[in-house]
Amino acid sequence: MVWKVGCGDKINFWKDKWLGEECNLELKYNQLFMISRQQTNTISMMGNFSQGNWSWDLKWRRNLFDHEDDIAVAFMEEINAIPIQCHLQGTMLWKADPSGVYSPKLAYRLLMTCNRQVSEVNIFQTIWKLKIPPRAAVFSWRLIKDRLPTRHNLLRRNVPIQETECPLCGNEQEDAGHLFFNCKMTRGLWWESMRWKQVVGALSVSPASHFVQFCDGFGVGRNHSRWCG
Image 1 (cartoon, rainbow, N blue to C red):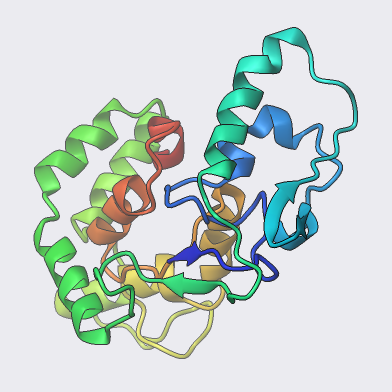
Image 2: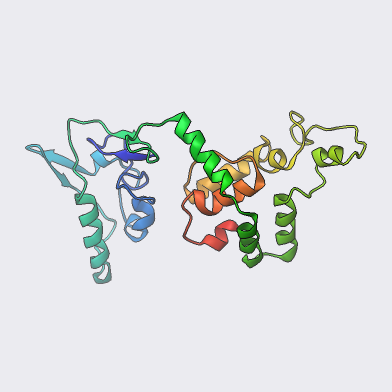
């Protein structure tokens, strides 16, 4: 989802995606964000209209250094390219459809396509290259191959057990997808990691799709190996 700008009263200038790109201004121009005195302001609070024309009123904690001039020029060119219109409300657009309108049918189709494209070969090539302890890589391999002794797998192998529910929440059968990604006791860890990276989205059920989602689906090209690890 991205913002189509109107008057800017609902859009956070630094933190929301309103320039049509994957990252926001805070990430793209973090050096300027750190010295801004308007870090939590909406677009409408970053300037004013005069006779129907918009002008920016940016406030900084200090004067810009000489080496920041080029960054500031690129920054101003980028924000000036988007017209601020006083009589229009901002709207959210869904980038997956040219119309900008969310469609459950197309969303389902996209998710199914993503799941079909998951290649275990590529996943494992990525895992073995990560700078993580060998035992962590092996554990990830076992998780994606569904080789861990979850209660679901034990039952499937005719191992007699008394309890089949998840030991953490007790609500559903313990399988790998539930235990590591969708249990209410572990889901918060993933939301926290997504908040740290400033990304949003629904979490996949299968371990393989989940790994691919965090590597590619959230647009995390930066620090790729660190994020996967």
